[in-house]
Image 1 (cartoon, rainbow, N blue to C red):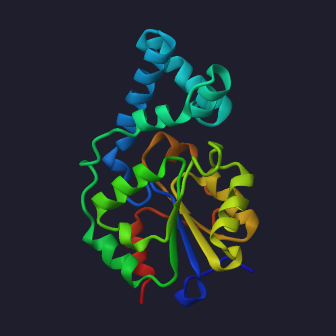
Image 2 (cartoon, rainbow, N blue to C red):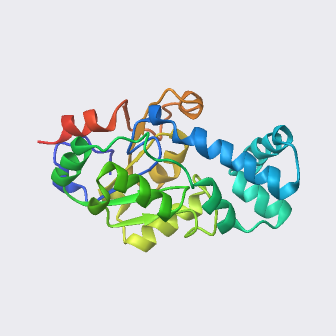
Length: 224
């Protein structure tokens, strides 16, 4: 089935949303807080100066896909302790969004969050936005045994868990490489371009069917 043009939204059964820098604007910059808390956790856990801890943090991200995975693999770290620490942040930079609330209410079909963060973090963010009640579930990093996007195996697990028909589904994400497995399964993909490091590293390859710059503006365009 070809990528959808959104002429008939009732043809779409499931909307799969990334969380961070997708449901809220990247300009909120919550990751800056998470970045510092990862560095501080590694510094304390390994007994290193912050600068050395930061180098390890970024090395593990590049080598293992997430810093979490690297710390688990190389240092037998408890993932839950790490995740609890790094997501203990101030979410007040995310403004409540009545606009997103109204759009999701009008958008037909199920809504699911697919995130490399945790359910708890997703709930705090969506509560802050005022949109938690629109989502049927959160598929998080704990459910995948801490394997992050874009590993294809966890997309299969997502589809199985929620009974998703990929041909009748849409995935929306701010990192374009995370859309490749979704497109391979037959989902229609929407990439949100952002002015972030990962946004600049992304690109609209063949697995990206639609490119947008703002979720609320795009939803306003496609909703009848």
